[in-house]
Image 1 (spheres, helix red, strand yellow):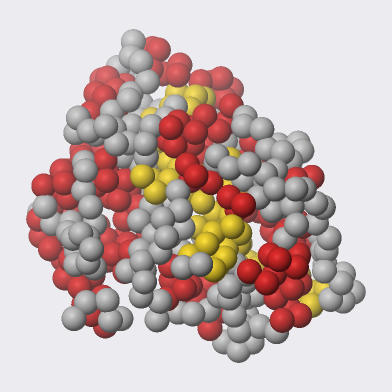
Image 2: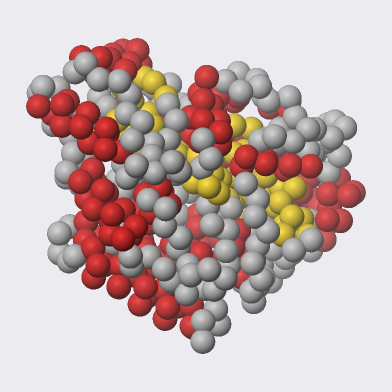
Length: 414
């Protein structure tokens, strides 16, 4: 089991490094490539790039789904593994390393990694374990026309967001003007993480794996989330990023905290009303509780290569995915899909929120080997509070109990 603390890798550092000497990717000539990952546009672009390498002697398939985090570990534990690569982020690589299902990439980078930038190489305990291709963060997305109608500036704090939501509702413009990816499970946990860090919280006691969320910062975070939910669609606990974006596109919401990778293409879908397109605007993340740290986290997304596959398939997978993130993909609308960590990328207007998050001192998602257990416990235990069935203190106590049991089972706590 991987027990050591991961090296901190922040999106700030990822976004600021100079390119190595360039090179052009080449597809593999033989082997099997099977990729599991998320489904948003930038990942779909990468998946399509890998699929372009399919041929008579090269088998390539992708499974891009919102359920990727529940199937990537089981799909890489067999021998040979079903998936030869998982496209992951700084949160989900932890689970893959804990289960020892991905291989170090140093040899593959040395042999086939020409053109990759140094900031793309995610090095953990001295070994390259992933190749990052984009940075990400959640930040404010809003309807400028609606805020103008109620005479308000874009909110810079969650307290201002609540005030704006009340003004929009009181003016009869929208009944539920706030959108949020509050779906019970991973999404709800991530919204808590954002708010908790914004209130100055730290998930674990210093230098240990002991939980540290049942405190003032934790209670404040939950109470702010509950207050925001009063202005959301009543079914908010079923709304992931896709459902939240659908609400915005339909003109039902005016304010939301959304991923940069989702916001960039928010109004490019077919059927979006013209007033929604015209009023679409992006800003940086908000603070909360008078704090200076934005209530968000910095992320990277990248690819890994499975451990339990042949060396031939590992080479094929690495080369196909390197082809998928070749600088030549930066044409058409691809540059707007993400803050790419690819040589030649020039930031677009759609990237302003992610860059604002990085420049405002946002913290990276805690990349600790036991953070996944905390994230799971938060996702499983917070819905009762959001539904009004228990107090914030009880919900947080339940989270700590669930986390502690899991951490003891996996050897992180005695």
